[in-house]
Image (cartoon, rainbow, N blue to C red; front, side):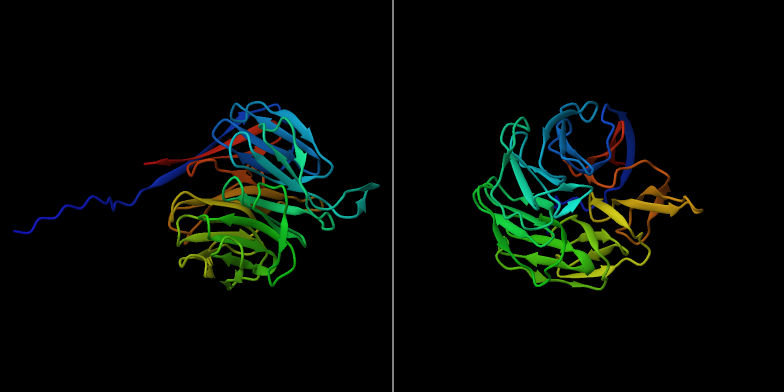
Length: 321
């Protein structure tokens, strides 16, 4: 007699996504958002030096800091320790900014300290920390790593030396950095060496995410690209939308992308905002047009995320059927 006991659940999970607006006191378009959990989050006003904090899931926001330069990215390790980075080179509208800047808080945003980093660059666009000590930043002309919690930043280079817009790690050693002209780099040694991956799209990459160790997605100027081999090669999803600024997958099949909808036309036409969703791993996408979504979002859990528009925080949720 042969007996077997299989405990693995191979049932395919089905998710539906929904969103609802939470009225807030923040009348700002934002450049970045980072929620630590479902209640505590931070955001920076677009084209401004201001950072705001919420402790009630986005219902109310309090100004916690005004910096020397616009903030493009915020990353919090926990409710107390976080980083903000940005910068603009040169002068415009009569104002001069001191290039790249990084700030750190250890008290939940009540106070911020400037970090030691070269300022002779035009700005930082993405931050990621794998633990309390080791973190990375990428931007225009300056890509850097810290091993001492931000006290010092050591520059590193890719073979492509232009603007990089996103960095993330899927574990303590494996990281990805993306930028213009389809450039996606991968490191397997905690950022010591970065190798360019194969991407059959040359469109600028604005955001990327991984559903698991093997399957990931990247969006941007052109159609969305997908990897099924851990980020070594990326293939265009031919039925996917373009001009997407944010992407998130709750599992390998169910995900959303936020970006442009359609052009209204005429002499004073505008691009509408839209959210797209897929339930088949990016083979097909459904568009919900004319929605007031921020260009970026933050998911403190795989199933719950937030984006911000004037007077509203939008909570996005994936629910299991």
